[in-house]
Structures are given as C-alpha cells and as structure tokens.
Image 1 (cartoon, rainbow, N blue to C red):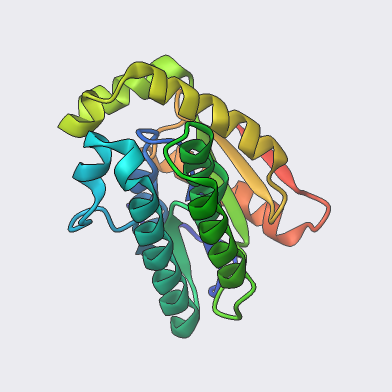
Image 2: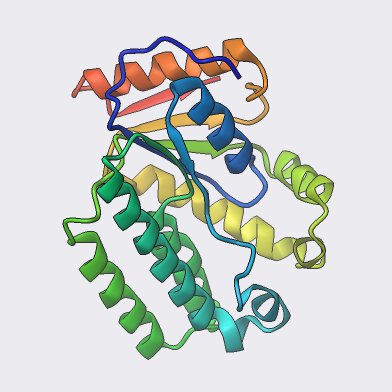
Length: 223
C-alpha cells in the first residue's frame, strides 16, 4: 500500500475495534502503511489460555481476560514510550465492555473475579501510560457477513464455537458502540469498503482528518 498524503498528527493513535472476523488485522496493516505509522497487534499466538478457554469458558474466562488486559497495557506503555504514531488492532475498552461483561453475564466469571478485573482495568486506564485514542475506528457488518469471514479464516476453535455465541457477541457490540464516548468514532461497514483498494483507504484517511481536526465531530459513518 502506497503512502497517502495527510494532515494527521505524526504522534496519533488510531485504534480499531469490532467483533471477531471483521478484518481488523488486515485494515491495521494497510492503514499503518498508508499513514507511515507503526501497526500494533493483539497478541494471539503464544496465548497460554486461548485453546483452554474455547474448551471450557467457565474455567478459563477470568484467566484469559486477565492475560489480555496485561498484554494490552504493556502494549499501551510501549506505544507511549515510543511517542505514538500507531494504528492499533483492538481496544482495551472492548476487553472490559464486551468480553469480560459477556463472561460475567453468562455465568462464566464470578462476581468476585469480575469486580477484581474491573478494578484493575480502572487503575490501568487512569495511568499516564494510557492515552486515549485520537479516533476509534469501529468496523461493523451484517451478522451473516461476519460469520462468512470467520469460516473463511478457518480457525478450528472459532468454527467449533456455537453460532449463538457469535450472535450474542455481535449484538453486544451494537449496544456497546452506541454508548462509547471516550473519543471520536469512525464507523466502517465491511460490505462497503475494501482495505486493499487505495481509494477506500484514502476515504478512511480523509474521515480521520475530519474527526481529528474538528472537535465538534464525534462520529462519522463511512459506507
């Protein structure tokens, strides 16, 4: 992907959010290349709890969420020390607002564990190493489109996960993003953009400029 001329700050942080299978990693790569910034990815490979979690949600959900929270904070600290200029794959806000809450609501995490997790999250986000994103890029799509992408990706533990789990997750994201107000939000629909298309990337960059430069702009919808 060729670089796109832009007027965004070089120390910006753009964080991608969205349910499993919407293409966050692909867009993170392409957008980082276009902006000449660094990509920051969610650590999945080498996660000591992930496969156990998919086998037994109730036993391993707290361990998994604590692992992700620690890794996310370490990543945030590293970006802060580097002076930012990053496109980040997944936000820490989803960890607490979507995944930990889901496990608690479904009885897979005790109230004691959930309160401990939530207390640690609050301590982390008040830390000077935790700057808010300049823009949260929220990637969305129809449930059927997302399920098709999950199947095409071919991760066995995701394919074997019951469809009802993914539907619940999709619905929770719809509620969560409408309540999110930590920073400006750019909404993208996976059925109406292509991260491998230079024109699509340019449209996203122009939208980021609008949100960063105009304080009155809090949400934009790109489709």
